[in-house]
Image (cartoon, rainbow, N blue to C red):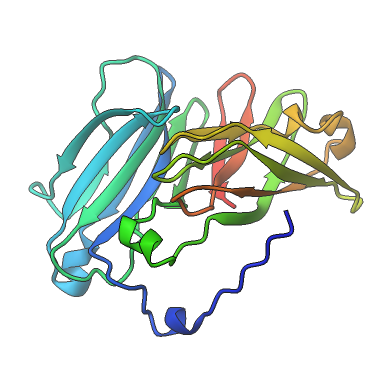
Amino acid sequence: MNTKLHINQIDNYKKNFGISFRSSTIFYFKKSKTFNTIVNFMDYWKIKKSINVMIIASLRDLQGKLIFRERVSFDKGPVINYTPKIEEDSFEGSLEMEAIANDDLGIPYAAMLVLYEVGKSITMVHGYTRTYSPHEIEEKKVIEFGEEAGLVCRDTDDVRSFIIGHNGISIKEEQLAKLWVSNIKGETIEKEIKIKQLNPFETFKIYPRDHIDNLIKFLDGKDGNVAISYKLSGGFTRTVVGNETLDGTEFQVYHS
Protein backbone atom coordinates (compact mmCIF):
# COMPACT_ATOMS: atom_id res chain seq x y z
CA MET A 1 0.00 0.00 0.00
CA ASN A 2 3.03 2.27 0.57
CA THR A 3 1.02 4.65 2.75
CA LYS A 4 3.24 6.80 4.97
CA LEU A 5 1.95 8.34 8.18
CA HIS A 6 3.88 10.70 10.44
CA ILE A 7 2.88 10.44 14.08
CA ASN A 8 3.85 13.36 16.28
CA GLN A 9 4.70 11.92 19.70
CA ILE A 10 4.68 15.23 21.60
CA ASP A 11 1.07 14.76 22.73
CA ASN A 12 1.80 11.16 23.75
CA TYR A 13 4.76 12.23 25.89
CA LYS A 14 2.57 14.87 27.53
CA LYS A 15 -0.23 12.29 27.97
CA ASN A 16 -2.49 14.58 25.99
CA PHE A 17 -5.06 12.30 24.36
CA GLY A 18 -7.77 14.92 23.99
CA ILE A 19 -11.08 14.81 25.83
CA SER A 20 -11.51 11.22 26.97
CA PHE A 21 -14.94 10.90 28.52
CA ARG A 22 -15.19 7.44 26.94
CA SER A 23 -12.69 4.61 27.37
CA SER A 24 -13.24 1.38 25.46
CA THR A 25 -11.93 -1.87 24.07
CA ILE A 26 -13.35 -4.62 21.88
CA PHE A 27 -12.65 -8.36 22.05
CA TYR A 28 -13.20 -11.44 19.94
CA PHE A 29 -15.98 -13.41 21.64
CA LYS A 30 -16.91 -17.05 21.30
CA LYS A 31 -19.18 -19.38 23.20
CA SER A 32 -19.76 -23.11 22.74
CA LYS A 33 -19.95 -26.25 24.84
CA THR A 34 -16.14 -26.35 24.88
CA PHE A 35 -15.23 -22.65 24.51
CA ASN A 36 -15.77 -19.90 27.08
CA THR A 37 -14.92 -16.18 26.98
CA ILE A 38 -14.50 -14.08 30.14
CA VAL A 39 -13.62 -10.39 30.40
CA ASN A 40 -11.78 -9.43 33.59
CA PHE A 41 -11.35 -5.87 34.88
CA MET A 42 -11.35 -3.77 38.03
CA ASP A 43 -12.67 -0.32 38.88
CA TYR A 44 -9.27 1.32 38.49
CA TRP A 45 -10.88 4.58 37.39
CA LYS A 46 -12.12 5.18 40.93
CA ILE A 47 -8.82 4.07 42.48
CA LYS A 48 -6.55 6.12 40.21
CA LYS A 49 -8.68 9.18 39.42
CA SER A 50 -11.63 9.09 41.88
CA ILE A 51 -14.02 8.97 38.90
CA ASN A 52 -17.17 6.90 38.74
CA VAL A 53 -17.82 5.24 35.40
CA MET A 54 -20.74 3.49 33.75
CA ILE A 55 -19.68 0.24 32.09
CA ILE A 56 -21.61 -0.72 28.95
CA ALA A 57 -21.19 -4.11 27.26
CA SER A 58 -22.27 -4.56 23.62
CA LEU A 59 -22.38 -8.03 22.10
CA ARG A 60 -22.35 -8.27 18.29
CA ASP A 61 -22.25 -11.13 15.83
CA LEU A 62 -19.48 -11.60 13.26
CA GLN A 63 -21.27 -9.32 10.78
CA GLY A 64 -21.39 -6.50 13.33
CA LYS A 65 -25.10 -6.76 14.14
CA LEU A 66 -25.92 -5.78 17.72
CA ILE A 67 -27.29 -8.74 19.69
CA PHE A 68 -27.80 -6.96 22.98
CA ARG A 69 -26.38 -4.21 25.16
CA GLU A 70 -26.37 -4.02 28.93
CA ARG A 71 -24.91 -2.11 31.85
CA VAL A 72 -22.32 -3.88 34.00
CA SER A 73 -22.21 -2.74 37.63
CA PHE A 74 -19.58 -2.75 40.38
CA ASP A 75 -22.30 -3.26 42.99
CA LYS A 76 -20.78 -6.55 44.18
CA GLY A 77 -17.18 -5.36 44.33
CA PRO A 78 -14.38 -3.58 42.47
CA VAL A 79 -13.37 -6.60 40.34
CA ILE A 80 -15.60 -8.12 37.67
CA ASN A 81 -15.39 -11.32 35.65
CA TYR A 82 -17.96 -10.76 32.94
CA THR A 83 -19.53 -13.15 30.45
CA PRO A 84 -22.70 -12.14 28.58
CA LYS A 85 -25.64 -14.44 29.29
CA ILE A 86 -26.97 -15.63 25.96
CA GLU A 87 -29.36 -18.47 25.16
CA GLU A 88 -27.46 -19.73 22.14
CA ASP A 89 -25.33 -22.83 22.73
CA SER A 90 -22.93 -21.65 20.04
CA PHE A 91 -22.08 -18.03 19.24
CA GLU A 92 -19.19 -16.12 17.67
CA GLY A 93 -18.66 -12.39 17.32
CA SER A 94 -17.29 -9.47 19.33
CA LEU A 95 -17.77 -7.92 22.74
CA GLU A 96 -17.23 -4.18 23.13
CA MET A 97 -16.68 -2.80 26.63
CA GLU A 98 -17.10 0.93 27.22
CA ALA A 99 -16.46 3.04 30.31
CA ILE A 100 -18.42 6.31 30.21
CA ALA A 101 -17.73 9.14 32.68
CA ASN A 102 -18.72 12.74 33.32
CA ASP A 103 -15.08 13.71 33.71
CA ASP A 104 -11.87 13.27 31.71
CA LEU A 105 -10.59 9.70 31.98
CA GLY A 106 -7.25 10.71 30.50
CA ILE A 107 -6.78 7.65 28.30
CA PRO A 108 -9.42 6.41 25.81
CA TYR A 109 -8.27 2.77 26.11
CA ALA A 110 -9.91 0.57 28.76
CA ALA A 111 -7.46 -1.62 30.69
CA MET A 112 -9.21 -4.98 30.56
CA LEU A 113 -8.24 -8.61 30.04
CA VAL A 114 -9.99 -11.36 28.11
CA LEU A 115 -9.61 -15.02 29.00
CA TYR A 116 -10.40 -17.88 26.63
CA GLU A 117 -11.01 -21.29 28.17
CA VAL A 118 -11.08 -24.18 25.72
CA GLY A 119 -10.49 -27.90 26.07
CA LYS A 120 -6.87 -28.40 27.09
CA SER A 121 -5.85 -24.75 27.34
CA ILE A 122 -6.48 -21.35 28.84
CA THR A 123 -5.08 -18.14 27.39
CA MET A 124 -5.48 -14.40 27.95
CA VAL A 125 -4.61 -11.07 26.39
CA HIS A 126 -5.24 -7.45 27.35
CA GLY A 127 -7.44 -5.15 25.29
CA TYR A 128 -5.89 -5.02 21.85
CA THR A 129 -8.11 -2.64 19.88
CA ARG A 130 -10.98 -0.20 20.22
CA THR A 131 -13.48 1.81 18.22
CA TYR A 132 -12.83 5.53 17.96
CA SER A 133 -15.25 8.07 19.39
CA PRO A 134 -16.91 10.39 16.83
CA HIS A 135 -15.08 13.46 18.15
CA GLU A 136 -11.70 11.72 17.66
CA ILE A 137 -12.61 11.03 14.04
CA GLU A 138 -13.79 14.60 13.51
CA GLU A 139 -10.52 15.92 14.98
CA LYS A 140 -8.54 13.43 12.84
CA LYS A 141 -6.86 11.90 15.88
CA VAL A 142 -7.09 8.41 14.44
CA ILE A 143 -4.88 5.78 12.86
CA GLU A 144 -6.86 3.62 10.44
CA PHE A 145 -3.95 2.23 8.40
CA GLY A 146 -2.28 -0.74 10.04
CA GLU A 147 1.11 -2.34 9.57
CA GLU A 148 0.65 -5.16 12.05
CA ALA A 149 3.26 -7.82 12.76
CA GLY A 150 4.25 -10.21 15.51
CA LEU A 151 2.19 -13.26 14.57
CA VAL A 152 4.16 -16.42 15.26
CA CYS A 153 2.68 -19.06 12.97
CA ARG A 154 3.11 -22.74 13.78
CA ASP A 155 1.08 -24.23 10.97
CA THR A 156 1.21 -28.02 10.71
CA ASP A 157 -1.28 -30.73 9.78
CA ASP A 158 -2.80 -30.25 13.24
CA VAL A 159 -2.29 -26.53 13.98
CA ARG A 160 -3.28 -23.35 12.15
CA SER A 161 -2.43 -19.70 12.81
CA PHE A 162 -5.02 -16.93 12.68
CA ILE A 163 -5.53 -13.16 12.65
CA ILE A 164 -8.77 -11.71 14.04
CA GLY A 165 -9.67 -8.04 13.68
CA HIS A 166 -12.65 -5.74 14.12
CA ASN A 167 -13.80 -2.87 11.92
CA GLY A 168 -14.74 0.46 13.48
CA ILE A 169 -17.94 2.47 13.52
CA SER A 170 -18.40 2.96 9.76
CA ILE A 171 -18.33 0.87 6.57
CA LYS A 172 -14.91 0.01 5.16
CA GLU A 173 -15.01 -0.62 1.42
CA GLU A 174 -13.51 -3.75 -0.13
CA GLN A 175 -9.72 -3.60 -0.10
CA LEU A 176 -6.57 -5.39 -1.16
CA ALA A 177 -4.40 -6.10 1.87
CA LYS A 178 -0.87 -7.48 1.95
CA LEU A 179 0.24 -10.54 3.85
CA TRP A 180 3.85 -11.52 4.51
CA VAL A 181 5.06 -14.86 5.87
CA SER A 182 8.71 -15.51 6.75
CA ASN A 183 10.28 -18.82 7.75
CA ILE A 184 13.26 -19.63 9.95
CA LYS A 185 15.58 -19.49 6.92
CA GLY A 186 14.75 -15.83 6.36
CA GLU A 187 12.72 -16.54 3.25
CA THR A 188 9.60 -14.41 2.81
CA ILE A 189 6.45 -14.88 0.78
CA GLU A 190 4.39 -11.77 0.02
CA LYS A 191 0.76 -12.15 -1.02
CA GLU A 192 -1.97 -9.67 -1.88
CA ILE A 193 -5.32 -10.74 -0.42
CA LYS A 194 -8.82 -9.38 -0.78
CA ILE A 195 -10.76 -8.29 2.28
CA LYS A 196 -14.42 -7.82 1.48
CA GLN A 197 -16.39 -4.73 2.43
CA LEU A 198 -16.65 -4.59 6.20
CA ASN A 199 -19.80 -3.52 8.03
CA PRO A 200 -19.55 -1.25 11.06
CA PHE A 201 -18.18 -3.36 13.95
CA GLU A 202 -17.74 -6.42 11.73
CA THR A 203 -15.26 -9.07 12.86
CA PHE A 204 -12.99 -10.63 10.26
CA LYS A 205 -10.78 -13.72 10.50
CA ILE A 206 -7.76 -14.47 8.34
CA TYR A 207 -6.00 -17.83 8.21
CA PRO A 208 -2.61 -17.44 6.47
CA ARG A 209 -2.71 -21.04 5.25
CA ASP A 210 -5.78 -20.15 3.14
CA HIS A 211 -3.71 -17.62 1.19
CA ILE A 212 -0.14 -18.95 1.21
CA ASP A 213 0.34 -22.03 -0.95
CA ASN A 214 2.16 -24.91 0.76
CA LEU A 215 2.54 -22.94 4.01
CA ILE A 216 3.16 -26.10 6.04
CA LYS A 217 5.97 -27.16 3.72
CA PHE A 218 7.37 -23.60 3.68
CA LEU A 219 7.61 -23.56 7.49
CA ASP A 220 8.97 -27.13 7.59
CA GLY A 221 7.89 -27.76 11.16
CA LYS A 222 9.54 -24.58 12.50
CA ASP A 223 8.07 -21.31 13.74
CA GLY A 224 7.38 -18.59 11.19
CA ASN A 225 6.35 -14.95 11.31
CA VAL A 226 3.37 -13.21 9.71
CA ALA A 227 2.69 -9.52 9.09
CA ILE A 228 -0.30 -7.80 7.50
CA SER A 229 -0.98 -4.37 5.99
CA TYR A 230 -4.63 -3.27 5.86
CA LYS A 231 -7.12 -0.52 6.68
CA LEU A 232 -10.14 -0.05 8.95
CA SER A 233 -12.78 2.66 9.21
CA GLY A 234 -13.31 4.19 12.64
CA GLY A 235 -11.29 1.53 14.46
CA PHE A 236 -7.75 1.12 15.79
CA THR A 237 -5.73 -1.30 13.66
CA ARG A 238 -4.46 -3.86 16.15
CA THR A 239 -5.49 -7.50 15.94
CA VAL A 240 -5.59 -10.53 18.17
CA VAL A 241 -3.43 -13.31 16.77
CA GLY A 242 -2.50 -16.84 17.70
CA ASN A 243 -2.57 -20.53 16.93
CA GLU A 244 -5.20 -23.22 17.45
CA THR A 245 -5.49 -26.95 16.96
CA LEU A 246 -7.82 -28.07 14.21
CA ASP A 247 -9.64 -30.38 16.60
CA GLY A 248 -10.60 -27.37 18.75
CA THR A 249 -8.90 -28.54 21.95
CA GLU A 250 -6.30 -25.74 22.18
CA PHE A 251 -6.46 -22.00 21.45
CA GLN A 252 -3.63 -19.57 22.27
CA VAL A 253 -3.63 -15.78 21.70
CA TYR A 254 -1.62 -12.60 22.03
CA HIS A 255 -1.87 -9.34 20.04
CA SER A 256 -0.09 -8.08 16.95
